Structure formats: C-alpha cells, structure tokens
Amino acid sequence: MNDLSEYKNIWVFIETECGKAKNVGYELLHAAKPLAEKKGCPLVAVVIGKDVEDAAKDAICYGADSAILVDGPEYEYYTTDAFVKALIALVQKYKPETLMIGATTNGRDMGPRVSCHLKTGLTADCTAIDIDEETGNVAWTRPTFGGNLMATIMCPDSRPQMGTVRPGVFKKGACDKNRTGEIIREEIHVAPEEIRTTLVERVNEIVEAVNLSEAEIIVSGGRGVGSAENFKLIEGLAKVLGGTVGCSRAVVDAGWLPYAHQVGQSGKTVAPKLYFAVGISGAIQHLAGISGADTVIAVNKDADAPIFGVADYGIVGDLNEVVPALTEALKARQS
View (cartoon, rainbow, N blue to C red):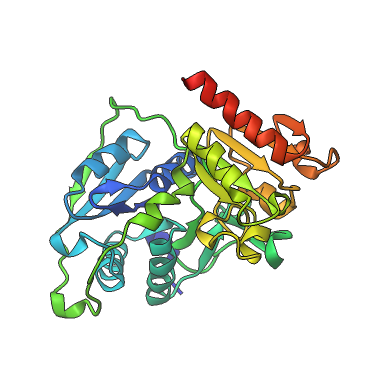
C-alpha cells in the first residue's frame, strides 16, 4: 500500500492529436476545478505530444494552475508504450493524489495500463466525479448493469486515485487568456526499440466524419426511422444544419449505421448546442447520453414517448412528413 501522505494535487491528462488538444481534457479541467478547491490543492494539466506547448498554455487558460509538458518526436502519434512510460515516470516523480483521463479510445487503452503498473485502482468510463465529504476521496460515478444503475466507487487505500471520464459529460469552461501559470518541461524520451508498434498508415476520414463528442449540432435517428434507406431523411436534415448524424443503439443493432454513430450510455455521451431526436423513444440509456445537450428537439408520432419528457421542443407527427418539411423550410431560409 502507498504512503498516502506523499501524494498531492489533482492531475488532468490533456490528450492531443497532431499538436491540438481534444476537448475532453479541457472539459475535465472545468469539472476538476471545484474538486481541487474543495481539497485546497493545485490543479495540474499534463500534456504529452509533439509540438504541444500551445496546448499546455491553453490548459492554463482553461483552469489549470500549472502544466507539465513532455514534448518529443516519439509522441507525435499515440502509442501505448511511449505514452504509458512517460506518464508512469511523471507520476512516480511528482506523486499526484488524483489522475483523470478522458475515456477516449487512447485514454481507455492508457489508463488501465498505467494503473496496473502503479498498483492502484482505476474507475473506468465515469459520468460524474465529486469529493466524498467524510473521507476526502474522489467519488467516481459510472453506469453499471447496462446503464440501468449507477455505481459510485472510491479508492481509499492506493494512490493515485485514477479514473477515465467520458467525453461530453462536462462542459468546457471559458478560456481566460489572462490566467497565468508555470509550464514545467520534462525531458522524457523513449527509444524506438522500446515502442513495439509502428504506425503504418493513418486514416482520418471515418473518425472525422463522425466526431460526435465535439459536434455542436447532432441529428439522431432511432428505430422509428424504419430502415437504413430512410436514414437519408436524417442525413438531409443534418446536412442543411451543418450537423453530424447520430443514432440510437437500436439502429446499430439493426445494422443500419455503424457503432461510431451511436449516442447513449453504451455509445457516445454528447453535449451539442442542438440535438434532434427523430424516431427515438427515449430509453434511459439514450437520455443519459444526451444530458449535456443545450437544446433537445424531438420528433415522434407517439405523444407519450419518454423523449418528450426531456425535450425543449417536441413535434408529434410522422417523421416521414415532418423531417422533409423541416429540411425544405431550412433550405428556403438559407437561400
């Protein structure tokens, strides 16, 4: 068991890609700030990548008190070996009490490996975080039993307390360019022979076309759309709005759209400015995935569908009539 008294501060890992930070890191800074205030400790951003000094500076603007920067050519693209070795080295040197990582594809790979090496616990895929008043431990909340129940988990005997947190669960705070903080540069390099994988080719098209986590407008279809062919209606509305196409789990299960489009507890948690739910009844798992949306508009022929309980605006009607009419009206306004 660790000597817990040696561990201080809350860390947030800022994931980058091609030198640019992903939103989830800044979302976590906003969520972790009040926790750091409760603990009376600094909030530290950790940035690992190539040419990512701007991401470290922006992390301070988004709420970090300081940033630890590891910059090197071996970190241009994510590899398990390089990033895990660097993060473990930082934790062993600075001994943070808490480490938060976005539950992205890379974060879900890196987090468990780091926690296993450090012999500490990790709560995966969290949707809420807080400080337990009695113990001072971080209370990590995550879905369980297929999203039907929520479990709150603590790590009282080991440090750092680690968790991966879903993108889109928290809002990104305002960027205050007047905030200042120290950037600590660490020279940690991993030899090529220590990296067991080689990037052969990088394909962006699919990922970038379905970037639900950072989309400001999402038009999602559910089982009520009726068929894969009928999703042309959803795609048409999304196109005229400049939005991204999403869907419910039922659509993925039916094979109408790939999993990358899925919104909900077992898909992507999203926080767009505008979310259209078309032909989606509103199962609790789906509602949990859209809780961060600013405005929800629902279209459903069932007036008693649960989706209307959370929608800001609702249209009761046949989507085959409503969606084309809405699409044409929006086109007319743009012309």
